[in-house]
Length: 227
Image 1 (cartoon, helix red, strand yellow):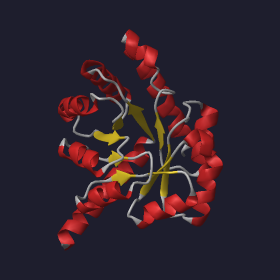
Image 2 (cartoon, one colour):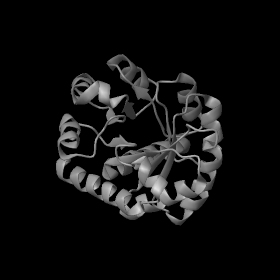
Image 3 (spheres, rainbow, N blue to C red):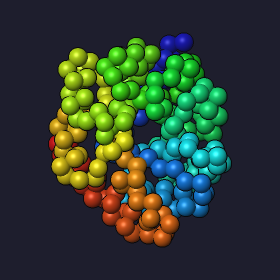
Image 4 (tube, one colour):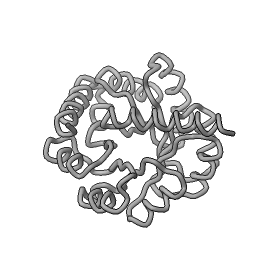
């Protein structure tokens, strides 16, 4: 039992550290395996080392499974699954090899499954009460969602009363100097970014050059504002 607990803590610490070092986690969903592979490849080349694919389409499990196999060429990449709302989905993607599981809400059955099976999980929370409950259930990193409604002030308020939790705003985070500086000045551990970072039109046009430029720019800003 001791070695299992120790291993879990080591894995948790490693994932949390890698997310903090990354500073940013692209959040992406697409029904096409080929398009998703191109986005993952372009993101990795641009410097991404933590990537979240989301369970938002009927094809999500098929695409994720293909992505996980494709990502074997990137041994230093963490590939997780988001928008998980049931223990059944947590189990399905865990068995596919998801490195971490993210929920848009605080879902106790997902927490129970992940804790029992030693899977790193991130609950979505929008109140101090939810953050406290998430921490009580074992979360070390909490997704502040929706970020555009909560704002950096929410981050400061939470950390003033629960200083040992780590927070990741997602939803409405913008890849600009002003917006990212506000979040990191408030004390976030990292940020999640979706369509603000990955323009859907670039995917349609197969414009990976623009995608890489967007990611590199965001990573550069984050390095500056998180010092």
